[in-house]
Image (cartoon, rainbow, N blue to C red; front, side):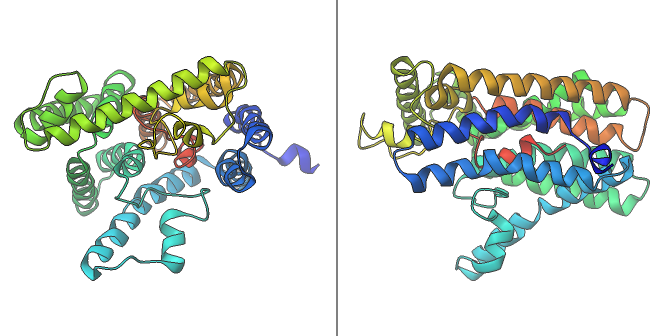
Length: 348
């Protein structure tokens, strides 16, 4: 029968209850129908798309090729952004749809005005490209892949994204613990190079030090501290809204509207922390469903990684995705990646 031929991926099934909570919360508490529909598109539709995509994956080799295609596609937003810089004009139309996605469904972080979006993209692309380079026997392919990693790494440095530095660092720390043999040695080398870069580059060092309360002395110090103070205000708004609406929250997508009640300076539509934003917008109920999904997802990833041990075709890519999700979990403490970057949550 058709039903017996369908595949029901556990992470997608586990995400459906959270999708329903998002939908009900947005429709019941949304301050405007337009806003509610916009924010709820990704959480509701992405599990459906992930389920459909799963039906077309029939082998491990096919899944590997899809993962490789994603890593190559990560250069497309870079190419478009470069073309925009060279032409001094914004590229729109069909190219913009390919770069940013239709509505909020397949947005792929091509917008360098918000570097944190690009950060989430490379949390997956860099480990995939590196482990792909480690596995390939072609010298030309290895040089091209490592060159791509260096390009994306340099772009990350120029974003001056503190969350990016920490999140990518966590990716390779996770690889130290989850990897074996050459992949573990690769992770150790990258961690050492990253530490040297963080110490030797003044701008990067000052940005990281500002996170732990050390007052920077570089030229961008005032901007870094202003950004931190702004984030503290947003976090305070989120916590206050949770205390006022502890069980069901203020409504999915409403935190930006609520923040304006505290100060006209708070123009953000998010509070730069995925977990606190869910708590503020959907209360304990929403966070419980979200963390339940995350726990199921982590269990599936770890068991899949154990089962793929010793399979050279699959293990490197499973390891890259598992480490990418460790970075994504950390990134959620510094950025709201629930709506804009939800495609990565369902990538495997």
